[in-house]
Image (cartoon, rainbow, N blue to C red; front, top):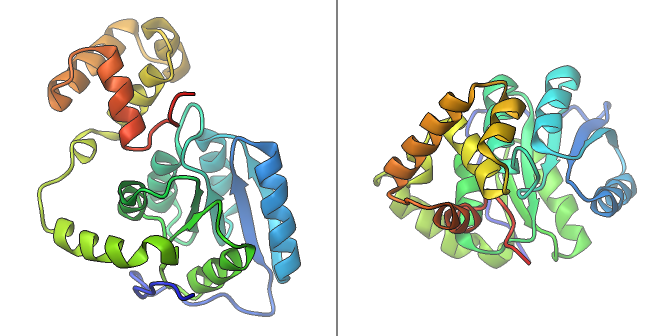
Length: 234
């Protein structure tokens, strides 16, 4: 089993072997974080420096600790892994991200790469695949799970030069509001969480519906699930 290695997009050098590779784990399930920590410990030469339960916490930890690598789930409350990845890559370009997800659909992996992730590993993969992904990304390469790499690379090449997806036409704030709406939060709750006025949130909601051509909350929820902002219901 081999990976698809696309090469380093930014020329980052591989990590110096005499120093441990520092890692932040971001997943809202404690058992998953414990499993990842155990697997990384078995690899050796890796130090898990912190754990995050949601995207906001992951961004804050990376800002403070500047780790070499983040292992990031997609579906997390408050701020999903894709949006968190975009913020981390923008603010801390020296930190690489591997998405570790249950979603095998090509759309999720494509969105992860567009968000700036350097790797995508499925949660049901063999444990040895995590080591291959970590080593590849630490060398400045891009790693994709073999189960999806061939079709995804071809799809990526076709779509890179095309029109932006509906999700890409939304601003970062719009995507954050969309996730919170899809998670069932009220306008007042969203305003309080984002420290914005209710009127501002109502404006964002109206703009969301206009740009996506979706004019009801159930439709927004279905869209958010389809593009990976929230986990499927049930």
